[in-house]
Image (cartoon, rainbow, N blue to C red; front, side):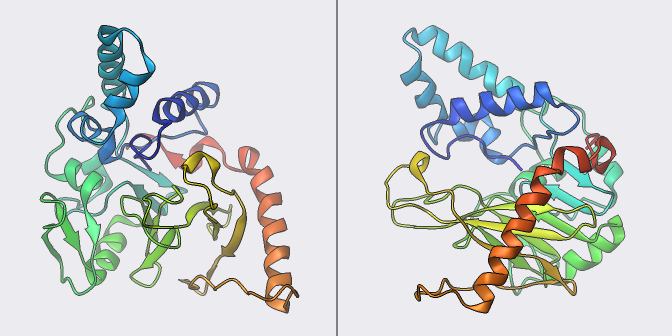
Length: 284
């Protein structure tokens, strides 16, 4: 969903691993573009400085930095899973009337504007009717709950998964679960001890959410990758995250959670086989 850089001190390694996975499994790995895959953003938020610190020759560092951003300019801005779940980094746009509007983009995209910008920058907001200027970002738009449902129906989609905003539990539902925001970087800021989350989409399009507890260490690389909660879509709505029990004795709910976690791990082991190439539309 984007923002592979500027989320810690290992942006170079993260992008290189993702690129290697894409080369090994091109039909199963799909990398969307976030707003931090824009040169004028990652120049200011640390990616350029990280590269400079890891390459001795300044001219090599600058050349490599440009090559990374050149590659980012070819990344797609959206994808569709199983013809029903729309994915992007940012959000909806008043300019998005059909998926064909996205397919018409010609890459590379160096300076996204209009619809392309909204797909990378837009945010959901409660109390908004339709769309309004996104004052927090100083660009793009905020979109409200009613318009989400109407526009997803128009696009033939049932749900939307996006990123772009840090959320305390690592994920957050909007518009009764029609929109799910996921943020996978634990402890994103020193003063914000946020969880990370990973979304696992089943063959039946049920959605499992794994919350990752931040560790007591200061750096992101030392986070504790403990699965602390799994939530699924039930009756079209997503349950809110439950607080962890302070009691050492396991309750019925915690035993059920453990069972669900084992099931999820088992499902995750089948992911590479179960999700064939037709499940994700890479043409967006």
